[in-house]
Each structure stands twice: as C-alpha cells, then as structure tokens.
Length: 251
Length: 303
Image (cartoon, rainbow over all chains, first blue to last red; front, side, top):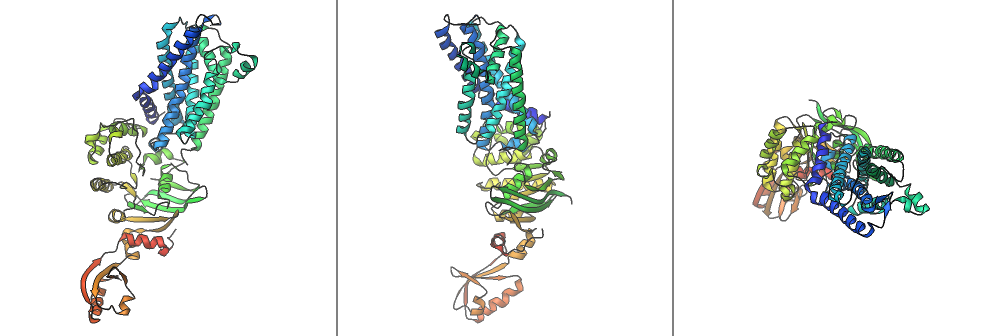
C-alpha cells in the first residue's frame, strides 16, 4: 500500500474532522436524546436478558451510531466530490481501485468508531455497563463499520444526485438499522417479525456487539460473526468489482 | 524524438453519439501541441481517455510509452491534467490541496516545489487561504498548480484560459512556455485561436470525433490562409478584379500569396479610376484556417 493510499485515507479523515461539529458532535447529541427519552419512558418497566433497559439500550445506540456514520462518511464524501467535480483529483493520480476502496472504507470505520466512542462516553454514566467480552465489541464495531462504509461507497458512486443518496439512506439504511434490535430484543417480537429480523444482517451486528458488553444476546455471537463476516466479504467483492469496472467513475 | 503521447485508432461512443472516431495522433516529446475544434468535437473526451477518466472502446493510448490502461500507474505519473471545469475541494486551503495532491502521486515533502509553483503562478499570498475564498481566476491557478505537483513531463491543459483575465493569461502562458522550454511536452485546447497560433508548434483539429487537420501551425496557415489586401475605394471596381475579391461594409478584400502581386493589383485599380481612401494588409490567421477546415475544405489527414 503506497503513499497515495495513505494520503487519500488521511484526506478522508481530515475531511470529516474539519467539520466535526456536524459529523461527530451532532450524531452524539442525537443518540444522547434517544437515550434520555427512551430510558425516561422505559427504565424500571422493562428488563431484557435480565439487564436494566438503559444499560441494554446504550450498546445498541453506540453501534447504530457506528453504522450510520460509517455509511454517511463514504457516501457523502463521494457524492459531494462527484457533484462538485473534484472527484477528478483522486481519479487522475496513480491510485489503484483497491487502494481507493480501502481508503474510503477505513476512513468510514474511523468516523464510525469516533462517533461510537463519543456516544459511549456521553452515555456510559447513565447505567452500569459491563465489558464482559471486549473482543466481540471491537470485532463487530470494525466489521459493521466496514460493511456500512462499503455500502456508502456503493451508494455514493451509484447516486447521481443528493436526493438519490437520501433515498438510499432513508429507505434502506435507516429501516435496516432501526429494525435490528437497537431498541429492543427481537425475542419480544411476534414470531413473523422475529423471523424477518433474522434476515436482517444489521441485527447480527447489533446483537454481536451487545454480546461483548453483557455476555448474553439473542443469537450466538459465533453465528453473528459468521453472518457479519460473510456480508463483509460479499460486499467487499461486489464493491471492488464496481470500482474495477470504473462504474460511473470512469465512463 | 520519442513520442510523449501516442494515440492509435481510438474510438469512443456515449450511447449513440460517436465522441471519438478512430483518432490517430502522436505528439513528440518537447512539443507545444494544440488541439482545436468546436464544442462537442471530442477534445475533452480525448483528454479524458488519455487521463484514464474515460475508457476508450477500442484503440490504445500511451503516455511516454506507458499504456494508460495496462500500465496506468506509470502513465498517470507522467501526465498532468488541468481540467476544464473549475473544480476545487472546499474543505482545504491552497497549500493543503497541493500537499494532498502530491501525496496522491506518492510524493512526500514536496514543499520546495510547491513554493516554486505558487510563486510562478502568483499564488504565494493565497497559500493559506481556503479554496472557497478564492476568486475564479485564483481557483484556475490552483488547478494548474495541482496538475504540476508531480512534475509531469507531459502537461495537458483543457481550455485553461476560458473566462480568465488578461493578467492571468499572461502569467500562465509565460509559466507554461518556461516549462515547455525546460523540456515539458504541452498539449493545449483552447477556443482562443490567436493563443494557439502564437504558442503551438503543431495543431490538430477535431470535428465530430475525427482528426480533420494535423500539421505544423506554419504549414496550416500557409495552406488554408493567405495575406489579404483590404481597401476602401471610391469609383467603380473593374469586374475582373471584383470577381476575385470579397466586399463588405465598403471594404474590398483581395487575397494574395506573394507580395509581388500587390503592386500590379494596385496599378489595375488606379488604372480603372478608383481612388483609394484607406488600405491595410492582413496576415494569414488561424481563425480563417479553422473556419475553412471546419467547412470541410481540408483534405483527409494522413491517418
């Protein structure tokens, strides 16, 4: 991996860091509001897997932030570059499609982790959190961030206009993340919805991530690891193929 | 002389539009080469294909001997492109943009060269200004600077002076001329034919994706343009003279190739009893060449 790759990665990180109030502070605040509202309503009424509701909710919110911000980073960077035309600055240099992919996805993971850590920092003192099996926490945060970062690359390349990207975000990413067990255990759902949730890969990201905190989860973390790992491999192959063909970037 | 750019039988379609039609072109190292043509002729598509922004449907393109697809890393390292659109990254300052661009080309610690480019383009005072704060002309200079960070031996400028003031044009051309004298190959597209005429040693004209003229600037001028004797006169112009001339706004224009033709011409006019009120001699110009080539008066180029 050459200096071209590391520069592109650095530039992508710098890009969101320069507007951190919008890209980091704002999503942290949003998650904090979710926590305040939901814990106010449900704390003391609901326990899941024997865990108080607020404690249960925090890892879900953290992971949701990781995922949504990883997606937002690569997708918004690419669509902005395409619409303004400055995408040529990264298309003219000798950067391979693989380096291109890796730089955008890794920067997305960094943004996701930074926001996720911010949410954790802002919320962990609301409820006692265990860090039962931290390796799972890290593994799912990294893989989930990479998957959504990769989806962001696809969406950013596919969309020609901002409203197309917004559609991708509102009609695919948002439902998948909200209906994944961030706010509840899928075991509390009616059988049909429970079964449907098991087809949502984001469910396994949230569930596996939460397992790292409490050591209990809806699904086995190994199953989650297999599903999430499989998704990551598939998406990586798919995205690399798009980039190799120059889809919408090199006519 | 080895070829800095070699384009062989390159075709490209966008849907049903044939943007490039079996283009053959070779630019020798060290040349100052002009690529002319009306809007939509395929100039930008050709440059994009050279830069790897567009993939040719068929044919091959090489920069300094490196194929732009098979050996894209080397090809791109040898090529600097100033895009036509005024694009910039609003997140960064001028210096940051140039450092990042250097990094993309694998170059660290490029500050000395960056300072030199900034100086030459009159950008030193703007080095730490955010790109958003710059005027259009200043943004254009940064685009030129970005294309030069990796000291490419081949520099392509796609309409660099469109909508640019006189001062920048002169700064820009002085700098580009110096680069050319230092051995850089320059390829230029422009709609300002006087610029092309004074700068370019050789010119290709594109029309509807095809090369319709390709020669040295001097030979193109000689072939498709001539000197003109223009005069305003009182009295009846003899019919045999009038038939070889064009008339507009009280001025007669007589094309001629050799100055020995001027005196006999004037003698005939005098003999016919015309009195000359005003007179001037026009040099051959590229605009006339351009118009005549575009009207299809050129022979098929040797490709």
